[in-house]
Length: 196
Image (cartoon, rainbow, N blue to C red; front, side, top):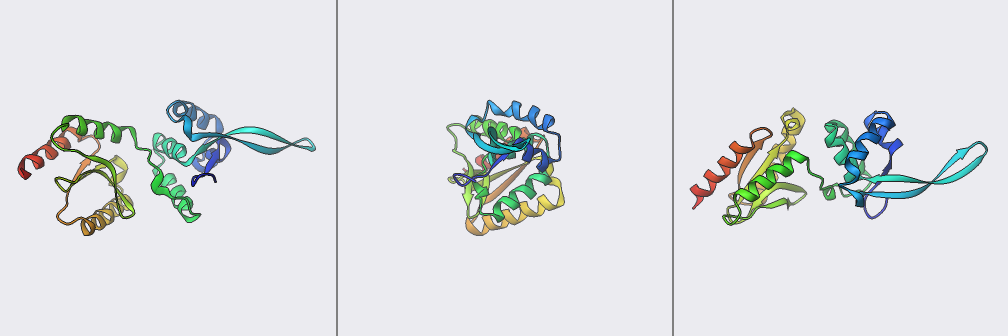
């Protein structure tokens, strides 16, 4: 643990996701260039013959591992990992890696509504983050990837929505499902015009 995050070796990551190290290595290579600040080198002692040798080994922070899990669609494993990290005192609210489709949707909304209204990404309300929030309209937009349809995730979404409703009076929620991005944008635009 360092700087309020936790680092994992490729061996540890392979155990977390129950995949071979070579499989993990392939995914790591695809992400490394986009997240160079998430990688650190630590000296690790290992037994070679009768001697203990210290070698430099790459380790990856929680953001990186989260991104890897999203890419591999290992949502249940990620939930368990984040729960364990939270239990040992890691602030999982700082994990800000967003799935590619979610980032693309945020970009679509912001570019389409530029100059009309401002949306803040990952707006904090208590212990929760709202995907997109427009304070001038008291509008929350939640982007739901396909895994949100599972019962456990759906109940967490509804709990989060209730907490946000209790914290921000007269808030309106618009939920946009993965695959329905343009229809979701259309609903946001209709809401904006009806609010004016």
